[in-house]
Image 1 (tube, rainbow, N blue to C red):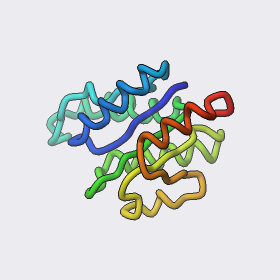
Image 2 (cartoon, rainbow, N blue to C red):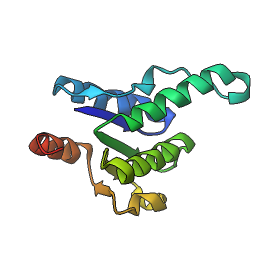
Image 3 (cartoon, helix red, strand yellow):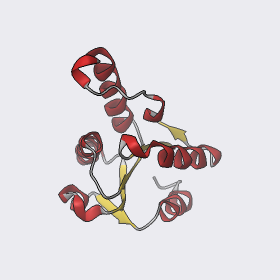
Length: 134
């Protein structure tokens, strides 16, 4: 299954651990944004910003499962990715969307296509249990 893991850029170590676990279970990562370097301010790195934004959105649009981890602060890009995942889900039924963490910080975590879970382990367990149906 193709999976996209989203969180703030500053939390990429956390994302790397999840990505590693998913790969060990045989899943494919639709876009590994953790390989991107920091490019702020964006206006000074416009070509990379263009490339990264295309890669990330394509990763969201081409995944079967979208996982968003929210902590104390919302990152700008992860909200855009969640919006793209919701729009894609409404249009095609994919991806299945999971939000973990401080979901009350994002109104869109309450969209009917989003499943709120309390841990990454719960999401991975659910994915593994139902992977034939996803």
